[in-house]
Amino acid sequence: MTVERIVFFAAGFFILLSLLFSQLHHHYWLWFTAFVGANLLQSAFTQFCPLAIILKKVGIPTELQKANLSAETAS
Image (tube, rainbow, N blue to C red; front, side, top):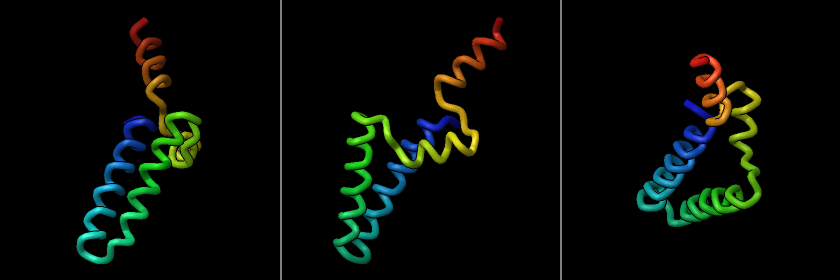
């Protein structure tokens, strides 16, 4: 898995989870859905994503790093 895939997975998971909670618990959970969506939108323009920063520090490779690694091993 790469940083980008984990970020997409986490965003989708949290959106679906908060939608479920909004139906089962309280409609205020939709604010969390809006927060995740707004974070995805701003990260598309600013390239700033807190989860991506954490994953990179942990050592998860990005798509570019993974592509470079596979190109080096193919040579």
